[in-house]
Amino acid sequence: MIIGGGQEAGRRAGTVPVAMIAGMAAGLEAAHRDLSRDMEELRRLRDLLIDGLSDLPGFFVNGDRKARLSCNFSGGFHGTDASLIMRSIPDVRFSAGSACTTGKAASHVLSAMGLSPDRQRSTMRISLSWMTTEAEIEAVIEALRHCVAGRARSLVA
Image 1 (cartoon, rainbow, N blue to C red):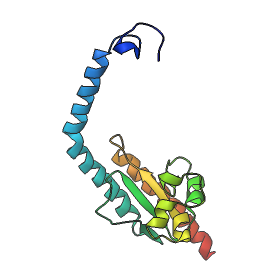
Image 2: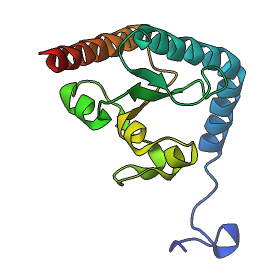
Image 3: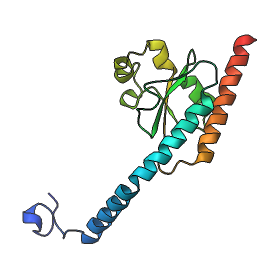
Image 4: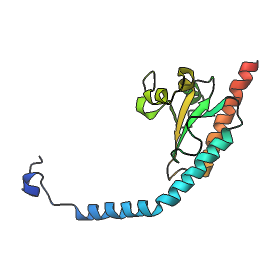
């Protein structure tokens, strides 16, 4: 496949990168060792996000509030297109709909969950990682609160 020496029964040139293999093993070991702690922290941050938005008008969470991925929020605000919120707060990185259908009109995942087309349009997806900080979650909450409050004021006016 790669021109060069006859290592690996002629399938590739070069020798096995032992240092890279050992590095990968060490990284996997560390990830496994810290997994429970990291998942608990992600769960705490995800719940902080949900709690920080829960009193806003029209707020909803897709799926079960507890039995869900710790690194993911799927929900939004009834009657508000998630893509409009995205454009209103460009400093916050999130997606409209589900990951499986980015860029498509409808999400087969959200449809399978039984969500109406209106709720699908209102759905946003925010992913967290081991690098996510509480300050970042607070900033997202503040940005969404400001955006949704502005939307509510414009509906009253």
